[in-house]
Amino acid sequence: MDDGEFKATVNFIQEIINQDKKTNKHNGRVHLRFPPEPNGYLHIGHAKSICLNFGLAAQNGGLCNLRFDDTNPSKEDVEYIDSIINDVRWLGFDWEGRLFYASDYFEKMYDYAVSLIKAGKAYVCDLSPEETRKYRGSFKEPGRESPYCNRSVEENLDLFRRMRAGEFPDGSRVLRAKIDMSSPNLNMRDPVLYRILKATHHRTGDKWCIYPMYDYAHPLEDYYEKITHSVCTLEFEDHRPLYDWVLNALNLLDLPQQIEFARLNLTNTVMSKRRLRRLVEEGYVTGWDDPRIPTIAGLRRRGYTSEAIRNFCDRIGVAKTNSVVDIRFLEYCIREDLNIKAPRVMAVLKPLRLVIDNYPHDMVEEMESENNPEDSTAGNRKVPFSRILYIEREDFCEDPPKKYFRLAPGREVRLKNAYIIRCEEFVRDEKTGEIKEIHCTYDLESKSGMPGAKRKVKGTLHWVSADHALKAEVRLYDYLLLDQNEGVEEQEEGEDFIKQIKPNSLEVLDDCLVEPSLAGAASGNRYQFMRKGYFCVDPDSTSDKLVFNRIVSLRDTWDRILKAEKN
Ligand code: ATP
Ligand code: MG
Image (cartoon, rainbow, N blue to C red; front, top):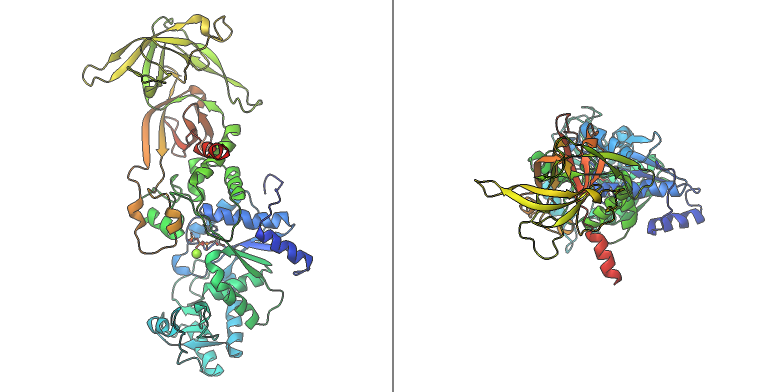
């Protein structure tokens, strides 16, 4: 952890570790790993797994490796490896040089497969994929033995060697474990250990044309790295007997234990890498770092802090049954973090011109403004004020409804850190009928330090000075998916989630105006635009035009939900 401390979290995995320490199971060692397959960018579900694995290691004085599970060359890419390394680091975790690749173990894995063949525990099978499926049976019926399962050790050794040598086409043969075709667990019905795949691997090139299957490779990867607790998601529960079978069949000792936990699902959110990849490749979003998708890269560009993400992962806890977390809880966590960290500034997203008729032409006052009321060390800045200002279009109403405490004809409001003004009249555009300018007078005495400074009016508005404001583009994001419960359906194939995509999840406002203190704001800087939300400078920003992403609005629905629950 980069902040040097870690809150000890008790969950069922920690309890298993406690028990193992008591019995001195691995001589007291605690060694975990985060094992992504480099076939896409990491998402917030992975963040949960990263926080869990590195967190458990930290709170137990143990270790955590970063390991690329790169056993499937057809879908993997170095771009993904680089992004994953970057994202884990950005989240604040350190693998202390223990970065490994499953592909580095291919030779050893091959030798172990040879051992299994010699022990009569694996055979080369020539059934086609279609036939293999038929022979496997179903939940209701047991499987049937492959006609090839009784090949001699010599024949198996010869065929497996020739599979490696590239003598057979893709899909023509596989190496299978010889376990039990009548097992109630389908994973144990002579599962495939190796397949032929003539694909170039991003690390091993064309050295291999057979590749180990996940269920064979993963326990061995864990074993080679001396992992003690191999944490994975629930869908692998039924694979655990096979995980253990592989290690036991090879007579290995001091074995890792596979422990499953519930994966993170979020409402309104596409989480699987496969689906995210589709969104990227088919152009539904602008890339893997589109601020609307829950990739770490997307969240970072949106303006999320790693602290908020870690906090979120810590608070949602670790469970043994699947559930869906309300995305508004993630938003609550970033608001909470930025409330303390983000400087307050004024930005007008949909500007309406406002002229103070009794304010001197050519006069400019520097208004003292607090940078962050939540942070006593944040200091003050000066914001220029002048005769012509812009306010938010929605902050003026010609015919205000009840409880509208903003500007309306004849009404008074305070301009933040400045004067109380009264609306005297407004001007319409002759052609469109739209209100294009409002005219006000100000109360000289109402400024800070003057006798009327304490005078109260109901509304306070943010503003910018026309001559001083900077142009900005602001990108507002809505949830990408219509369906609140997308998270639950996550694993289901078939139904087309593309239909669930909202047509207008991105709204670009390109005539925004921000106060001049934001000149030169660096990409990644975060601010609270007063009354508007939290915003982050996008990498698309230039010296001519700032570009901001809205991280989250100020309205804190989660806070209200919590309060409502208490009452
Ligand atoms: P996806 O299903 O999104 O494609 P994956 O499980 O295939 O993800 P891997 O690269 O294999 O992705 O995952 C690396 C690790 O992250 C695994 O241990 C996996 O269990 C964990 N992980 C993946 N998705 C989630 C999630 N939504 N919540 C918690 N952990 C997850
Ligand atoms: Mg996967």
